Image (tube, rainbow over all chains, first blue to last red; front, top):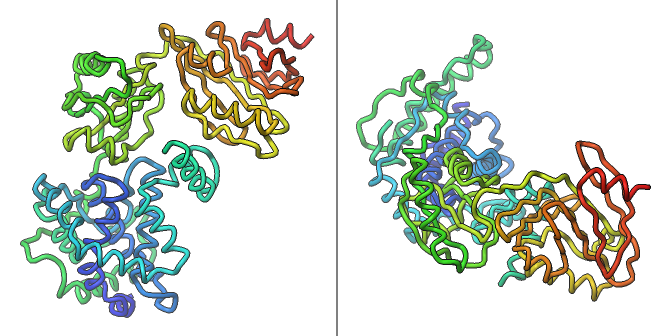
Length: 168
Length: 310
């Protein structure tokens, strides 16, 4: 475990990707508090599941965004942010002050954050990158309609596009 | 944990993270991993994290994270008018205030063509609050999360956004059962009912179906009525969508509802019968509905269904 933590340099991963990841969640949820919760749970899940990280399958950032996507999808499906990993690590819930939330929103809007997010997305395998960018750029929660319509995510995405064309 | 800098505090928490033993007692392997994780963490996060003073995360405090409860008094609601009927939002705002909700804004929605009323949470975390608002307004579906457009109009403080539609207000009619009609041409993929949201789309769908020579799938579920309005739930076999309209809208666009229980199915030229399954009292009835003037119709009532069967 220690080797893996060193191999991925967890603290650097946090330093570099906490802000872009929060920006990603913020764009997807529109709510800084939820975004902060998702960021916390994603890093906690990464830390708790560090054994499962396989460096031969790509950089740690891809793995991190994989967890992030999963957390986001789960939160959208269940209507609440998961807290399991944080509880396992004995982490308290963060209760950001309004000032802290403002700061988070500002940080997410900074150009450097956007660049870091782009770089992180670049590091993903193509298939995953498409899925993430589709969601980041289009601002559509495909898993939600998918769950509602009981159809695959791809079909929901297609329908969303058709709907958009039709409504515009 | 109250925090002024989310990311710094999160970094600190990650550095200080202590795996909490599970109940039942941790397996030996897990304990080793836990210990190793701890050591690894100190190494890994030694240089990182925030520079602020940090307290040790007490495991008991973390497990006590409570599910947010939705008390009316603490829920901030923005009420938007999604129609061109003046005064709807003010009226609903008053109703919510009487229910103990804090109304933080009343405004017009970006689009003014809503039929049904939308209740949306700012984020999934406010879903419980949205449900209580929906309940207060008599709206059934509260599992929505507001989009950026709505949030901009609703303002920063709102936790729940209500967009009123023409059919705002409680649904007073009783559920009348469910009709699912499918037409062979539709099954072949001519059109999908999932596109149907507004009366204008019903018309669009009908036109396209006519052109394609296909039937239009229509299904009516719960029909509810308030004043001159009617709400029709359209349901495809593998998806669901809700179409709402005033009685006049629906009539104009080919779906007629002569009373709260009647279901009419618009079909394309040349379709002579429609097979339908009518569920009433939990029992499905398979029917073949005759078509007259492009309309196949039935009602959800058992008597009528029996009559159709014989």
